[in-house]
Image (cartoon, rainbow, N blue to C red; front, side):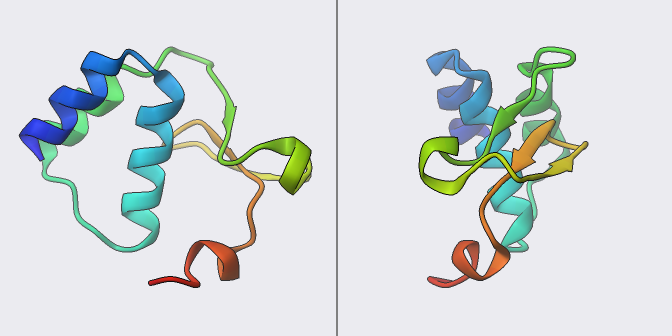
Length: 82
């Protein structure tokens, strides 16, 4: 987790951090407190991103406040490969 959080931060993409954190939690993978805090520290206040392309999945989304993410993909799709 330490290395993954470092790589995600190094890439400098807020949406990458948001998606990584959300998807890990959605599939019930626990992120230890330290790496989780580092991931969250790279999120910009008030930044809202879509989980997936609105062109493909539409703009109808629910908001995940923890990761500031607009979840526009149905749960059955997210969990279909798990």
